[in-house]
Image 1 (spheres, helix red, strand yellow):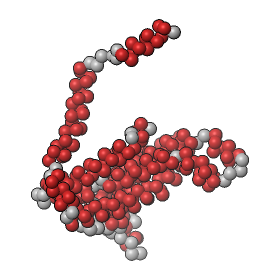
Image 2 (cartoon, rainbow, N blue to C red):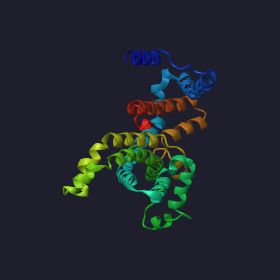
Image 3 (cartoon, one colour):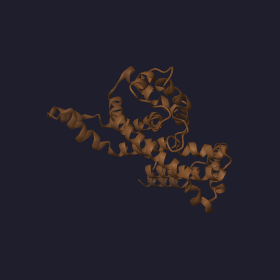
Length: 273
């Protein structure tokens, strides 16, 4: 007993040495990630930040971003929850194929996702766009188009966050409830959803943050129309193009603080999962 206690103390107090050839690249990597953030915060005109965020450009972009991201997050919840439940219960090659389709927007360049949406729903030379236009439905270059683009890129984040919880819950408790005569709907409402509540909340927050920061798919599919499709990232880009770096920095700080708030609020929960 004494020998085990002594060895445990030695293990805790004398950690293994850290070779410089491992630590040095790690420090460089941290600096590479931190340097742009430090530069952004250093260059931000804090004294005039409120005035810069009170302009019509910033106000309209913030309004559009909130509408687009909140609606997109809601769609991710409505569509992604059944999808995550289904994925957690699929097996074999079917699951691999469906999962690859679901996760594809995470690795696909956003501008490619926007281009794909344009050739699927655009008014000309698209898959179903002309049919929709004949019945009076036009999606591209509208607020609805911006919502759709944000939903496509944000949905995989929600599904990933919830799928693992749904798979963990696919255990004997649900089978026991079914044996006792509970309907599938009652099992889903009373067992599956309560046990996955925290993961669902994390998924919604992640989807909202991703939708809020979407740029490429929105620009390609919905355009950059002030007051309709111009979100905060698009307004930031427009400010840089117009030679107004202070405005771009102010908008960038808003997005940076939102992103940090999401990561801190989730407490690495989704990443650790």
